[in-house]
Image (cartoon, rainbow, N blue to C red; front, side, top):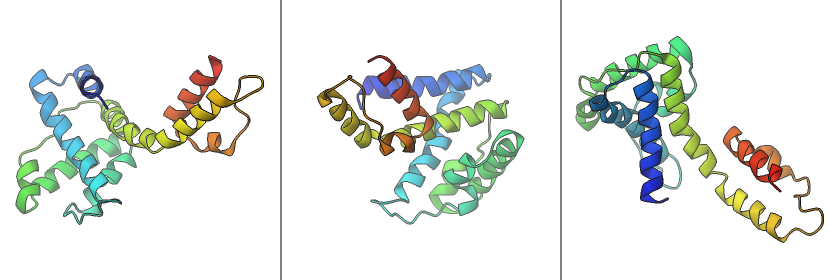
Length: 166
């Protein structure tokens, strides 16, 4: 992933915060909390399998499972509870507060951060399909395949775009 792509992605996160009235100075703080939780979630899974001290009730997965007012209330409680933890975790989240006013924008931001991971799981499968597409003889379209049926929504958009342009 190039530096320009990363910068573009971060600015798309910031645009979501700006649309919710979060000031320029608060972008970094708000994104840091969410990205920290996302990274902790990734490090807790294979191949890293690190033991992290984030309570299960307040981890990344607890955020992705909720929407609306429930998400906003849970996120506010998460920030408060993690700020009271001992050690480095408590220091990171000390006096943290949610600056987003609209639960839908908070959900969108969490979904944008989470969508990157969902699509990364399918990169290898997409590369295989692109190779098969480029070497396919016949009408120029991929044959029906069970691999196409198991993609997340962003990947399905990619499928529709790619195969409609053939």
